[in-house]
Image 1 (tube, rainbow, N blue to C red):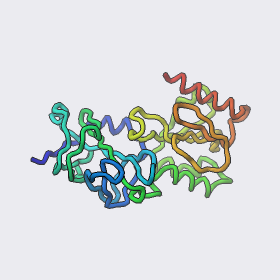
Image 2 (spheres, helix red, strand yellow):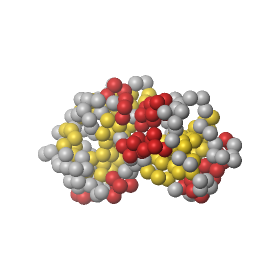
Image 3 (cartoon, rainbow, N blue to C red):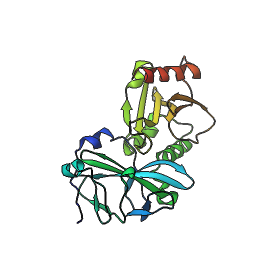
Image 4 (cartoon, rainbow, N blue to C red):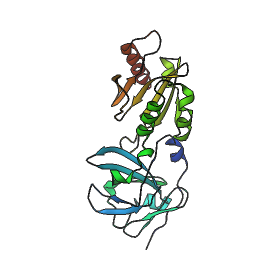
Length: 248
């Protein structure tokens, strides 16, 4: 019997509202592993969370809803089951059983992990690509106004952590995908001083000029266009690292 899902609790959606979704260029086969068995197919325009690109493949995930009973039963997706999104819309139908090792089940929600080919992710939906393009176009005018549209479209949020050590800065960020880390860390954070972009914190490679790029927290790095007034690059990195240490 095919099992239908109910719309899950909204709290999880809110908690990860600033995770950036990439867009499927489809139809796309969602596979268990690179070149592996097909778990289901995704339509063009479907949102997914992308991990790192490796050998032409992205690890990706999608979220579906589960009922309270399915959660209690530790539900596993079987061939023929309907996959329903948070709005009650059909995402796809499972073409094979999905191993429990490829899912993360919580109350009201299941995250399914797999792989899609690089060619099946729209390049302009990857936030590093859009940021790099915007900076190339505005390389002599890195003012907040040039980034306002990007911040709104990609749902960047304001970060207050940095106020502990650098109160003169404004920081806007999106979370890293839960494919990489289930506890949210910044994927991209834009640092502004007096309305000017001065640094970019990032968890994935960026191709933005020849600037100093320093480790600040876990795998995150800080690309410094210029340090805040009165500080050296080293002092700036120390202040950012201090802010993270104070969050524990």
